[in-house]
Length: 382
Image (cartoon, rainbow, N blue to C red; front, side, top):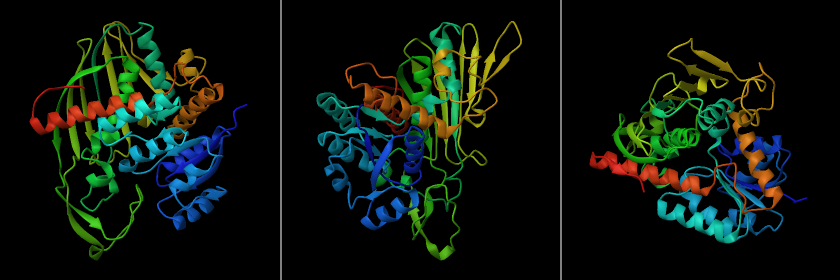
């Protein structure tokens, strides 16, 4: 039996989601590291974790730690993932994997050289009905893909007074909405369809070129109320909105809309895949349903039920029909696969979870999309 002990780095919005997924898989989280020793101590108490490391370096130096989860701001992913791999730790990293494809390519190479397990948290692949859509395409049930269309919409940056570190390129990168949520849509739809993206044409818009930055810290999605005196003007260089035309390798066409300023949309990912025999559509606000469209007979609404779906979809379900599974369950399912792979110990075997290679591919897409938006032209990927 492989003795697995985990160190968690970063405990903002997404770190506790990793922690919950780990605990639901009975995986021991030994300790955590944060930006300061004081914050680490406070978070360890709040989250019921036994050990608070004074620094990230101290966590890596602990020989008991075998796996590191990185849930830190984007600019830290590359140096922390690299340091963890060099320290001989398996790594599960939040997306984006790095700030550039040069950095992500280096991580892919290093992980392979070190024979260490590496995963990128494209957790949305593990919605059961997304897996069902993938199995229908792989079996030929839908036929040849014509069109992939959809959106990822949020409203958490709707107001000029809404603020988060992702708005600052030094912390989040020069892409924001596309890298933050558009990357999930792009990964999910390429995973489901099995298609690669050849070229893109993008249009960006920043609706709040000047935002009101709080002079005191605020956390993601907290919506804390501040007074006018608590804000300073901050110019914004990253996109609130993007529309992206896509050419796929098989000749299919696609279009994606990404927005973080769509009122009422808290976190809605939608896609529709139109093919030669049928269509399928998925809405993350109703993630236990899959719409199946037909020309010659009534449309269908397939509800999540292990007895009604493919083996691939069934493998991501823990509850019977009528018992909904949602966003936290996607973390549980991804973590289950990663740690089953670690326990088997054959790190040359094919993986059934997203790896650093997938994170590198998403950065290739993002760089092409950003170049297209700035140059107002079609850009080939990679």
